[in-house]
Length: 266
Ligand SMILES: Nc1ncnc2c1ncn2[C@@H]1O[C@H](COP(=O)(O)OP(=O)(O)OP(=O)(O)O)[C@@H](O)[C@H]1O
Image 1 (spheres, rainbow, N blue to C red):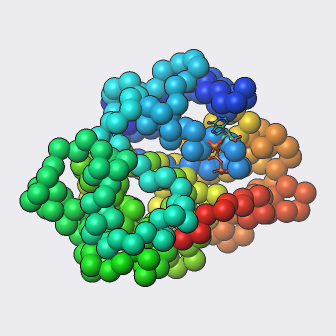
Image 2: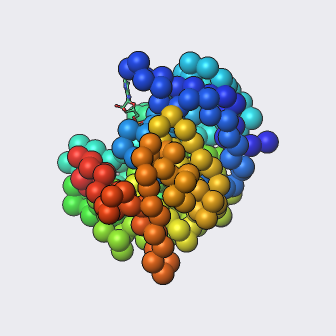
């Protein structure tokens, strides 16, 4: 059984085809880096896996079942918003708030809830953040609490939407190592979106690159190439490898650095 299976899936939004006739399978326990230019459909794909967007054609199966809303087997970390940083909550209460927030319906109360929140905080190495105010934490610390929220209910699949955004390289590395550790120890499948391939190179099993309605899934060597990316960007792309780093270039500009602008700060 695949963790994620798309069979001829088309997703349209606002009159535009975001994904066009995509078929792919992601195995259980894989760590997949999800990349693509702004607007390629990375968030939309995650929302479709969550059952929040219905494909106009094709079928989506998640962990052997049709995609559906409120699937407790999925942990979802949406793109970070400024609002989170300003919340006047302790780290513990912030994690617990997910139970009646976006993970509503989880069947715990009292001691069970306390145990589950403590377990999740421990799993992300954030037990020491439990009593601290969210507003006083660094971006990397907040990101760990968001990951703890995702782990409530012990999901089998994590959908992490740009968890590295606004983090410096040191904290990016911490988040990646943490997710890798969780993926291995808890045997979870991870779909991890990012706007740059380089930080992910040491941790991902395969890459899923979206663009122009198309998708390419495979090893970094097979997917991050001039011909494949030219098709996904719809223009001439050159891939340059310098030591262990990879640069995706168009007309002499480094696309992965130049193209992405997000209004999200931790
Ligand atoms: N509810 C919606 N209605 C209409 N269009 C939408 C809706 N949601 C997203 N879109 C459009 O769908 C396209 C894909 O958006 P999506 O957020 O999935 O891309 P992305 O790859 O995650 O981009 P980014 O890297 O900027 O986060 C964009 O052009 C976006 O404007």
